Length: 541
Image 1 (tube, rainbow, N blue to C red):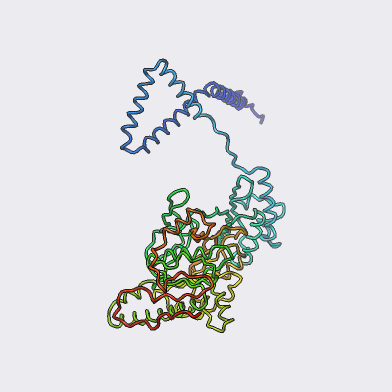
Image 2: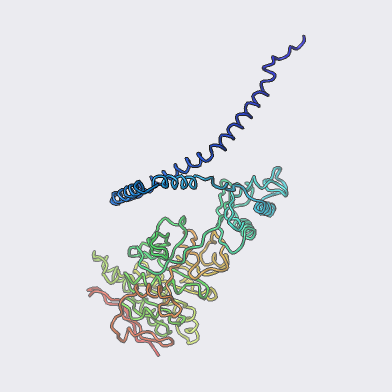
C-alpha cells in the first residue's frame, strides 16, 4: 500500500512556527530597546515610592506632623519658584533613572582559581574517604568534585570560608583519630592562621567546615547584669550559648553571648582552674572575677608571682587580704580552711535546731590563688607546708560553706598542681595559644575548632563540668596601676573597685617580697552560734 503524503500545512507548520517565534522575539527585543528608558524610570519610581513608604512607617508618630508640614512647605516653595515644577520633575526623573538602573550581574559560580582549589582539595581527600573495595566511590582520583561538595563559599582572597562535604558511610567518623586527620588536612589546605569549626553529622554522613569570626576584644570590665552566684567569665559565639548579657562595647551597647559560671550550694562546678601561657590573660581573668565577687562577697587573694598585679585590691572593702609572701599566704590559707570548717559546723547546728543558717555563713568567700607552684617551691625549700595542701578543705567542702576557690597556673608548672586541685576544679579554662593535646589535657575534651598560633590576650577555651568546649574572650581587666594600661580601661577598673577601708595593721598594702599580716575573719553580724575555730595569726618574718 502506497504512503500518502502529508498535507502541506502539516509538513511546513513547524518551520512557520519557528519563523513566527523568531519574529516575535525580534519585535520584543526592539520594543524593549525602545522602551528601556521608560522601563528604567518606572522601576526607579517604584523603588523611590517603596523607600518613601518605609521611611514614613519608620518615622515616630510624634514626628509625622512636623515632617508632613516640612514636605508641604517644600512643595509650596517649589511651586512658586520660576520653573520650579519643571526642575522638580527633571530631578525626580533623574533620581528614578539612577535608582532603576540595571545592577551588575552577581557571579554565582566559582571562577577558575576557585575551581582549581576545590579540585585540589577533592584530590587530597581521596586517600581518607575511599577504599579499594568500593565499586562506586564518592572520592576517586580524577572524579567529579561537584558531587561531594554540595555547598561552598569563598572570601575576597579566594580562600574557603565554608564547605559542606558528603563522605561515604563506611568512613569511621566516630573515631577521634580519623576525624583529626581529616580536620588537619582541611585546615592545611584551606589556609592557616584562621579558626575553623568542624560539625560532623554522623547520621547524614556530612561534614561542614566553616571559618569562625574573631571574638570581640572591645568589651572591658563593667557591671554585668547577673544575680548573686553568677559570674561572667567571658564571651563566646552567639550560637554556642542561650544567654546574652547587655554590655557596653566600643561601638555602643549590645547584647553579647556570655559564658556564665554559677557557684554556690547548688552548683555542680563550684571551683575553677585557669591554665595559660605567660601573658595570656590569666591574671586579668582573676582580677575580673574578683571585681564581680566583691559585689556580694569577700575575697582573699594569694599571689604567688609577687608582681603586684593585685595591688589595686589592697585595703578595699570586702578584700580580706592580698598576700604575696609565703608566710602570709600560709597563714591566710590556714585561716580559710578553719573558716570553712566553722561555717559547716555553724550551718549544721542551725539546721539541727530548725533555724536558718547564720548570716555570716551565707556570705560568699572567694579564694583566688595565682601561681601556687611558686609558693610551693618556696615552701619545699624552707621545709614548710605546701599551700595547696591547705586548699583541701575549701575545695572539698567549699560548696556547702559558700566558699569558692579559683586557681590560676601556667602550662609549664601545671604538673605541680596537686591531685585535690585537679579533682575538685570541674570548671576549666585554657587561655593563650596551645596545642589541641594541651587543651584536651586541661579541659578533658578537644575543642571543635582549630586553635590559632597567634591570639590576643584573654582568648581561649572554657568548659564547665561535662558541658561543651566553648570559645572564650575574657573582658579586658588590666592592672589600673600599670603605665601601659589605657585611660579608658584604667577608669573602667577603678570605677568597679570598692571604697578603701581606713588604714589598719591588718589592711596595710602588701609590699612585694614582704609578708604582711593576714586579714581578720570575714565581716559579719553578731552571731549567737559557735565562734570561729581559728582566727588568723600574725605572719612570720
